[in-house]
Amino acid sequence: MKKAKKIILLGYMASGKSILGEKLAKTLKRKFIDLDDYIADCENLSISELFSQKGEAFFRGKEFKYLKELLNKDTSFILSLGGGTPIIDGAMALINEKSLSIYLKANTQTLYNRLAPETTERPLLTHITTDFLKDYISMHLSKREISYKKADITVAVDDLTTEEIVGNILKSIDVI
Image (cartoon, rainbow, N blue to C red; front, side, top):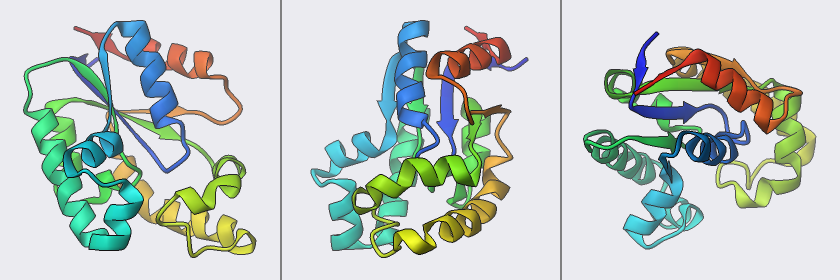
């Protein structure tokens, strides 16, 4: 079992990374960091503004910069990534070298149910209609899962409560 000083939660948007990260951090008495919030604070722009004003490529560059910055700190924390962070070239290798990575695996239906009411708040979904959302998620998820599956641990989140998922995570890690 890999020792966990830094724990990274990754997975598709709406897989529960932020909510579970906060709960896990509280349980382990660690600092919680949401990478999107960290980027927005450092750049003084929301993620939506970064996407619309600077473009996705610019955002991904900043995302990787701040990920490296956080992973090089000598502190313990729980970090939730954006859904696209693991697909950045070199990101998963760095994540797995510097932390314990946990893939929060959700199926397409679960993700659809969670995302359908909030497409306007998600920069990658603003152009997707509800009619095509499930197909988009399925296609997008299959591409991203190649990176997600490189995580140290995979934890299923479908049909489980936050407490059950955190319990399953705790059973899978060795905290230092």
